[in-house]
Image (cartoon, rainbow, N blue to C red; front, side, top):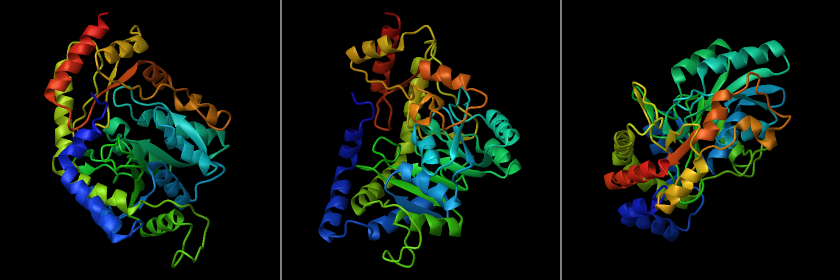
Length: 377
């Protein structure tokens, strides 16, 4: 059993994917070209954003957004403490200071109440200028954007949606990657919509920011690539990955999001009564289920449980074992003014189970049975 079975997806889409890749190879145009333009148009339409700019990976997408806003030294950017490293890494990369904020214990996403507290604390301290919030759609569930937007508006903060794991999710029919002033996603292979390498995208309705992002992504180009008007980076999505994503996007929109939500419902039913804390559901919110993550009781030896499941052929992962504010890379270069006790607890108790639109009901039944056995050993 695979943790996320990309092979099953390839087998289902093989004919279309092989044809798309061969078309690119035959064209001789491997950077840019019609597949990239078509993909950007389709992604923008799916999300409901005016502009989509593809780039080399999801981390670059976040950094490009901060560069377009001119975020830099002396600025505070508020980031959830329970997330992947890149959400805070990009803040330090542009010279700003990440301020880590605790999360909601059931959604795993940044807590609007703790965000409000952190913004006020940084404002009172007066050492940094609050500039932006990075809200992460962790494990596929959109963050609480109505509440986060209220905090941002009341403090004149820019909102950057990190939709690397949330692409395909929604709130009240409004799609993930459309909630930020700028939103981003990742096409890393294991993401809800993944390519066969690295890839990312930036979404915005603002014409000026879109123009800046396109410029920064290609060496700060002006009217053409040899007219360099600012210092940028080399961050382009290649044609091969765009061609693969065009095929995958059709399947994703047509049935994969619906399929993965069906798998989550099977898990809910199979794991009811096990004593595990199951992923939360919120009225009007749809997750794209990048991960199905449960919480163990603090008495459970997680490493031993993982070993027991591995012996039974069930792979598991821990996302994430260390809070952001405890990462050595941020030592002395971040702020965590109120502590993050929820994150500290989650890092000790979360466990992610095999997930994806190609997981079967029999797979879920086997995983649940194995988990029950391993928990009683």
